[in-house]
Length: 339
Image (cartoon, rainbow, N blue to C red; front, side, top):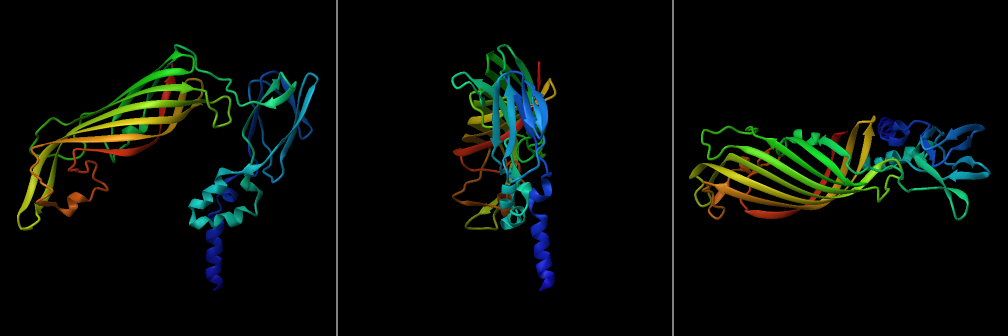
């Protein structure tokens, strides 16, 4: 019994995400629209538009400091909040790690980015969420989508895209992806030349929202249109429903067209001065259309062999319908350079 209790306790301790992964301190970045001073733990720090870092100890207590500018002084008391790693316990071992994290101040954190401005009406220094960074007209980005190159469960492609700002914080982008190799199967019969390509067109509106509470990050809302075209030779095995002894190996070709519409949210995370990551997520609609050539399979009289119906690792997942619409969820990132 003691051994079982010891094992259970070990499991709980090892799955307490915040207690294990969080440091005793956290980071709070502070900036101001004008030169000011921060008084924190009896130290005086100069701040401006460039962010400075405070490293407070995680605690159940609020984070207290004062900010001074000319004759103005504001005492700030920043409420603590639960760290995202605390909520990660829910996904691990039925949330048992929460029991440990509830006894540890490592479960707490504070808002990570603060930008102070002077309110012209009240003449007080307040925290502002208004973006102070913007992307200027005629700015030009060049990028690729690395996940497309590694998409072995669909069609891995090499992609290259451009983004051009036709106005401040408003851009149009176009991306092309291609793969002309036979990436999956080789057959003696070829009804068409195998090729795969994709197009992506987007329009983005930047810095109208601030979900990150970081005035320095460029966030955007986007409308995306994608078109994916695949042409490939394939093969299925099937037998007659009424006579399983009649077994067929059917060579055929498929032209597959996928149309995708998405509404997306994303943000630009800089890597130095030139490079950046573009992280995004979105919801939309995916429409698939198949055009099969030389296919003799008839679902009314034939039954696909089990091995051809098991599509977990089959990148070409044979379908016998012509068109269907699906809910689409997108999540990914791009790697780019600012020109």
